[in-house]
Length: 103
Figure 1 (cartoon, rainbow, N blue to C red):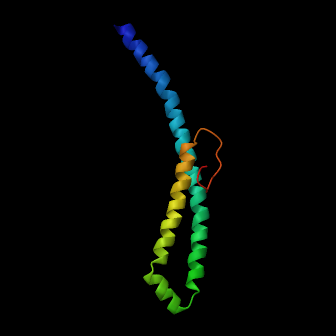
Figure 2: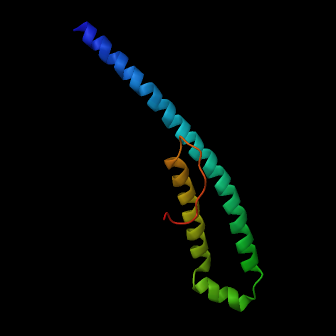
Figure 3: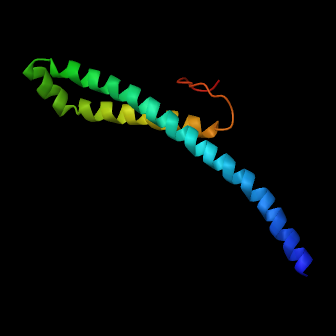
């Protein structure tokens, strides 16, 4: 019985260690890709909002009623989430960002 328990513990150790390394590698890649994409999209969002700020007051009030700022925030958040999930799905291999749907 102790031999079976020892064998079970050894098999468990041999299977958990590679799984743990793969998980850490995937999380690291996801964090790095998130930081890079987040920085790029924050620049784009700041540029878009600064351009909107230069519009006349009448236009700004119409855009405010249409909630264009909320729409832009939702779009930028969706791009960040998509990039993060694409990086997490391919954590073990070389990745390339695809912004178009799969064919």
